[in-house]
Image 1 (cartoon, rainbow, N blue to C red):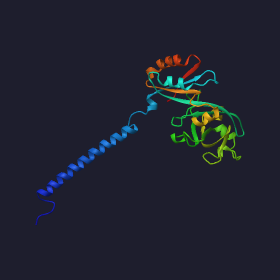
Image 2: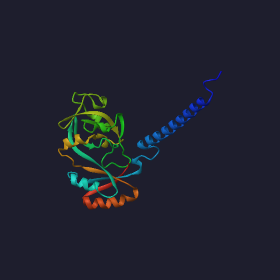
Image 3: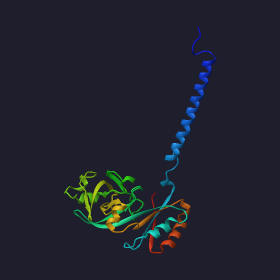
Image 4: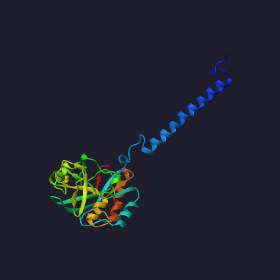
Length: 241
């Protein structure tokens, strides 16, 4: 009696099954490779391949206009420009505080800080792109220890809870606390750009810029172009990616 696994028809079915298996493996390899490419694969992250310059007016009361920001974006070898906005406001139980509006999709940075003064989130969470239009904040450790929410709770114990804090005429929920080890620096508050703009009463302007350069060899050329565009009344420093 013949077996269903022998004979010409069975051999043909086995050949077809083998072809399908090989094709499936090949397709999986291609799809996986494309996915790795989309998320970066083994390539170095952008932040490791680009150089950054922080550019800000020497006079703190001066702001970069939208036209100046656009001209900066158009400089050769500049691949991105991130704004930040500084506002000084009265906070709950805290004297005048420096509030810094940042791009919520970028790594946390503090204007004018040295390379060693990098804010580390020690409680709660950092910003994400979803926070761009939210009234949220990440506060420094000193600010959290000294200040209270609008209901009288110490901020440090209410990280990522509902009681908001008062910044000027706005109520803002604290989602995280950062520390740099420097008391003065840790007395500051970070918020999304839209919150700082409302507190500073201007739109689309900038207290300073982070300028991303495509290659370390081009940084000096970009610095010269920035002087031409922005004039001599600015300070520049290289910052960590």
